[in-house]
Amino acid sequence: MDVYKYFRAFLMRLDPEQAHQLTLRILKTGAGPHQSVDNPALFVNLWGREFRNPLGLAAGFDKDAEVIPALFNMGFGFVEVGTVTPVAQDGNPKPRIFRDIANKSVINRMGFPGKGLANFWENISFYRARFKGIQGILGVNIGINKEAASPYSDYRHCIEQLAEYADYITVNVSSPNTAGLRDLQGGEVLDKLLAGLVKVRDAAAKRPPLVLKVAPDLEAAQRAAIAELLQRHSIDGLIVGNTTVTRPDKLDAKLKEEKGGLSGQLLRDLATERIADFYKLTGGRLPIIGAGGVASADDAYAKIRAGATLVQVYTGLIYEGPQLVPDILNGLVALLQKDGFTHISQAVGIDARAAKAA
Ligand SMILES: Cc1cc2nc3c(=O)[nH]c(=O)nc-3n(C[C@H](O)[C@H](O)[C@H](O)COP(=O)(O)O)c2cc1C
Image (cartoon, rainbow, N blue to C red; front, side, top):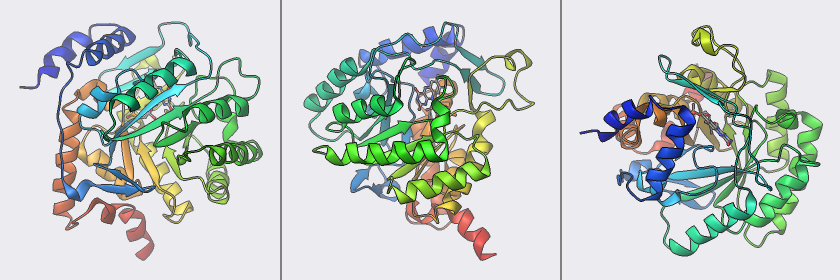
């Protein structure tokens, strides 16, 4: 029996943010599901690290790194906590999360609420001390404060503090809810930012891979410029992508005027197209983490075939519940078998490669 089905009906009657807070409280007690799918066809070797499967939890669910063990117990191969900002802040006024249930989508304009870097550091250092063995790969997503005098200093501060504990660090320049943040995706600004942050990372005792998270709304010229910069600065990976500021026709009319980023099913195909674009632009050499509207094994597989080495979910979890994790993983094993692949790596970018050969 999928207990979450009943719990979901209850959660959907609550305000979305209250539902999220309640979910976190339950996960903190350890009452979340314990499930795993262990199949060698799904192991991913990346950055010298072994991912037990390619499915991760996207940033924004566990902003303060409070429930990491419970998230790994759900079966994720990797978990990305954050976005963390140097100083605690409230974020935007509530309400700031809106559901489009018919389209299994969400608009949010959270604006990086969180308890700040010191508290986050406590949480992940405590987690590392407690779980000496590897539960899974832990990514840390870093951002800037609303009042940041210098974005570079904010990111630098986060990298310096967290490099020791992160299996990888995501530089988030793509949330639509912090004024000016997405401008950091522009050529010259990004060039300087990446040059600086790579130096900060290289000065750390442990040197975690640096990953950039971009918006799905970038124009073709911006995408080409970013792809070039990522390779020039030897950035280790790219997350494609964040929420979209576009408003598809299908979106619930009541939500069309709500500011913020759209995620879930209505973002799915746009995100997959962008993954394919970046895969081609980087010649398949740059590891891509695909995110946006994944809510089934087919969705995850489409992202992998477009060029994603790893895949993340967030909104799908809200609508489908934690059973989604084993469902996607078991489904992926079946899809690989159907296509005659013995390992997930064989499917990465296969659609782009097939298009080139044609
Ligand atoms: C409520 C909410 C909060 C989010 N917060 C963050 C965040 O703090 N940092 C970030 O990089 N992405 C954040 N995201 C974006 C997700 O990580 C993900 O990139 C995006 O939602 C697309 O995936 P999905 O369609 O599976 O949700 C948030 C998304 C949602 C729905």
